Length: 75
Image (cartoon, rainbow, N blue to C red):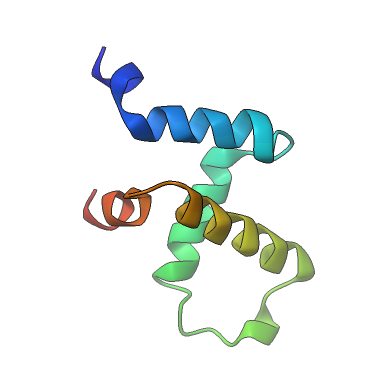
């Protein structure tokens, strides 16, 4: 199974289990992509405290998983 051998799957599982076990990683990534794309021009003050927190978590995920941002952008 190619998904189980993909290093991003391993990193994602580690992130989900160890770092942010209480967050919905799928929603976190979706919201992060939206914020990087269609909501990128919105001023920071339009986001709620929860949205700021989620975005910080999303950015930490991007930093901790080599190649994730590139894969998100192309795929």
